[in-house]
Length: 139
Image 1 (cartoon, rainbow, N blue to C red):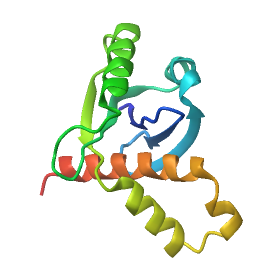
Image 2 (cartoon, helix red, strand yellow; image 1 turned 60 degrees about the vertical axis):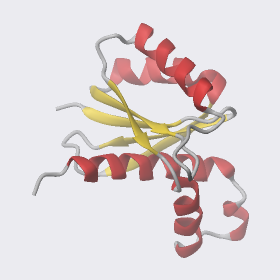
Image 3 (tube, helix red, strand yellow; image 1 turned 180 degrees about the vertical axis):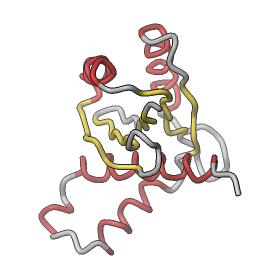
Image 4 (cartoon, one colour; image 1 turned 45 degrees about the horizontal axis):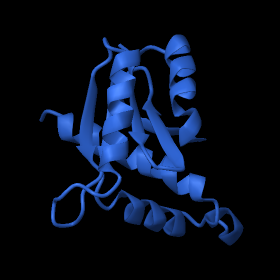
C-alpha cells in the first residue's frame, strides 16, 4: 500500500503532508517554495511509494473558486503530464488556514515560531489530508 500525499498549493510556498504506509496517520512532510515543487515531488516519488495525490481545492465561503484556482489547475495539469499513472483528487480546503492558526495557538507554539508562515502551510496540508482520510472512512 502506498502513501497518500496532500498538497496545500500556494503561489509562494506549498505545504506538503503525507500518510504513513498504512494510510492511518497524516503527518506534515515539509513546505517548499512553489517554484521547486515539481522537482521536490519528482524526487520524493522516486523514493517513496505514493498511490494518490490530494490537492487542496480553494473555495470562497460562497462556494466559488478562489483567485488561486487557475494556478492550481495549471499545476495539476503539469503534474498529470509528468506522472500520468498517479491519480490526483481535489479536496475542499476552506477554513484550513483558520484551523491551522488555531492549532498553532492552542498547541502552545512560541511566538517567534508562530511567525514562520511555512509552518501554517504544512499544517494546512495535514488538515487537508486528515479531512480527506476521514471522508473516506467507512463505518
